[in-house]
Length: 637
Image (cartoon, rainbow, N blue to C red; front, side, top):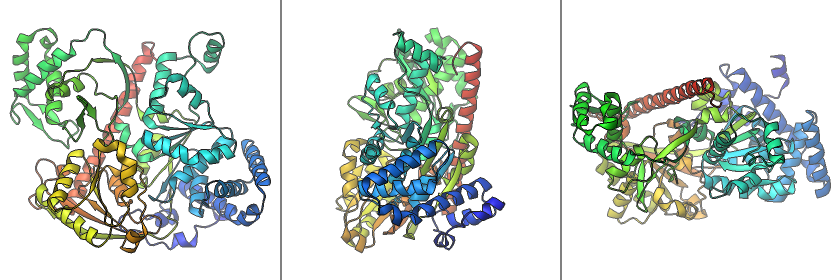
C-alpha cells in the first residue's frame, strides 16, 4: 500500500466526473475500495506515465526531426533492457505521431496506450480514438522487440486500421502489414514476418490452426532445420508473441461461443441423401407433441419422448445409418434446428444460389463458412438448393484456447466492465476503465414499449421523421437483416428517404457510414457494435443536436446495446438515444408478459447473457476434454 500512495492520485477531472446513466461509473470504480488492487495499481501507473509524457511535451516539441527519432530509438533500446524512462519514451512517440499524422494524442489516449501492456483490457468510450491508441501501443511494443498482432473483429477493420498506422510505423522504421483474406500462404508468411501485423480474429486463428494441422508437435528448432534442408514448407506464422485485440469483448467474449473448424471435402459422403431424409422426417413431426421449442433455452429444440419414439418408427424402413435409434434422433433433432430455429435473413441469407451465414456479432456475411456435421446441407435442403459437397473436420480450436497461447495479451473496447469477471477468469485480463477526453453530452430520450411489431416499426419511422425534420441525422439500429428490412418498409410507408446497411450491403459499408452523419440523413444498420464505424457529423447536424440513435430491440448482451448507444455524442458532440421496443420482440421468448416493461427486458437480457457465459465455459471445458483425449491417443495440443 505504501507504493500506491507514492503514485499520483486519480486526476481531478476524472474524480469529479458525473457518471452517465447509460454507462459505467469509471471514476467511482477507480477510486472505490471495491476496485481490484491490480486495477488501481495499473490505473495509477498508467496515469503517472501519461503525466510524465505531457510534462515533457514542451521540451520534446522543440527537438528537430533527427534528434526526436534518435531520442525515440535510444529510449526504445533502453526499454528492451527493462530500463529507461517510459514517460519520456511516450513523449517522443506522442510528438512523432503529431508530426506524421497531424493528430496530437490527448492525455487520455496516452493513458490507454501506456496501459495496453501484458494482460490489461482498456475500456475506452466509443469515439475516443481507439484506433490511434492501438497504433501507438503496437509501436511501443514492436520497438521493444515484440512481434505484435493487432487483431480486430473483421477484415475490413483490420485493413483500414493498418492503412491508418502505416505512415507512422514506416517513420519509426517498423515493418507492418495486413492480412488480406484472399492472400495465398506464401503472401501471408511474408506479412507475418513483419514487426506489426493487422488481421481479423478469424483469419489469424485459422492460420494458426492450419500450422498446427500441417506441422503438428514440431519444435521451433525442428521447423527451422526442416526449412533449411528443404523438408517441407515452413509454417505460415512465426509464433504467438503479443496480441492487441480491438473490440476485445466482441472477439474474446461474443465470438468465443463458436469453435473454429477447418474442414476438407469428404471423399465419399452420403450426407446429401441423409440430410434430405432427416428434413423429410422432421417435417412430419408436430410441434408441442413431438418436439418443444424455446429460442431462449440452451437447447432451443428438443424431441419429446413421444417424438423420439415417432422418429425411430419413421426411420426404421430407411435402414443404413437410420438403424441406430440414438443416431436417428440426433439427425432429426438437427433437422428440426435447421427448419425451425435457423431463420433466413436472421442467421443466414441466400446469395448467388448459396446459403451464406451471417455473423451475429458483426452483421456481415461469413464468406466460405459452413455449419458442420450436416447442418449446412439440411438448411440447403430446406431452402430447395442443391446441396454442396460435404466436408470432413481436420482440426478445431476455440478462441479461448487460441488467445491464451499468446505470451502477451491486451485489448480495448468501449464495453468491457460488464465482462470483467469472465475476462479475468478466462484470459487473466485486468480491466482498466479510462474516462472520456471531454465530458459526455449524451441525452436519453423516450423509452416506449409497443404492443406488436407493426406498431413498433410504425412508431420508429414516425420518430425518425421527427428527428429528420429537426435536422438531426438518425441511426436506426436493428439486430437482423429481416428487422432492417421491416424498418425500411415502415420508412417507405411514411415517405422517408433512407439508406440500409446489413449483410446485403457489405460492399457499400464505407460509403453509407460516410454519409450517416449528415443533417437529416436516416440510416438503418444491423449490428453496429461489430462494425467499428465512426459516424462523423457535419456542422448542420452538430448544430441541430447531433446524431440520434434509435434502439429497436434489446440485444442478448447489454454491452452491445451500449456500443450502439455509443455511436452518438462522441468526443464531446451532442447526441440523443431513444428506445422503441415491442412485447413481441424475440428476446422475451414465446410467452411474453401481457404488458411488458423495461424490467422484463432487463431480466430476459440478463438470463440470456448468463446462458451464453455458461455455453462459453462449457465449450472451453469440452475443448480441454477433447484435447486430453487426443493427447492420450497421440493427437496434438
